[in-house]
Length: 274
Ligand code: SAM
Image (cartoon, rainbow, N blue to C red; front, side):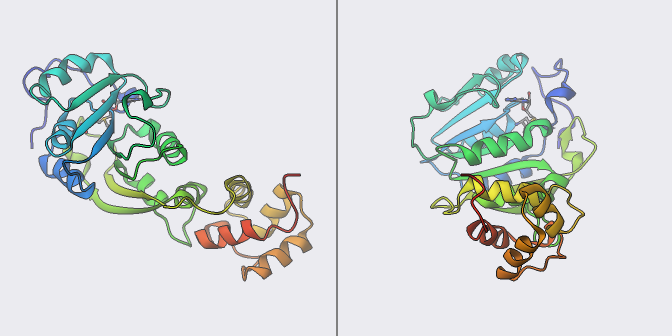
């Protein structure tokens, strides 16, 4: 493992505010490519190519790689690192704002693979899960704690877990030591694989999210009080609604599974939107 950048990159000063912790271990790069099952038919979108190490590994297997980088200082370095790889397109821009569809025709299948900057992890996942044309799968390297929260099971569920799991199946593939990044971040990372549900979930997303947000409004409190207060429903009505779905009124929101939340969304006692 190299601990600092290679030739041509040595004068580069990483910017903490952009989440610049570069991956320096070939084994982890290759693992991400394998987990994403990249093959010669694939179009891959990468967010934050940085110094280009993951981009390089992806481009060696994929048909085409489109990578969006926010930091203009990295563009000349990327041109150097990716020299000779004709299937890579680098776009300078903010992945949270950019409409990248001109580079990818509508409805085209693609995979999203990234070592994500920590400060945009959640908005990026949300943006792509909710996209009109979501990626067929995402393989992401992110902070271990965030990965664990996303992939949580009943007993440890959160608003984040329920929101991601509404759209996709998410699992932790492996943990990654903070020592393999340059500069070294404060916490370890994890690789997660997110596969969008296909077809898209049948439940009404607006109702589902309204109920889940109400349920987690005070995560330590019991469901009964959260739901009745936030949805403005009498306690008796909420008790009957929960009982109908075999959920105890004393349970806390973290105890419910995705299917419990889906069942609640389907059996809502009165229209919330009229
Ligand atoms: N992929 C490289 C690697 O694995 O070594 C770099 C990963 S580094 C954690 C995150 C990268 O995302 C940095 O290059 C950073 O400049 C870039 N970045 C940060 N915010 C971004 C944004 N909003 N849009 C696109 N790229 C961004």
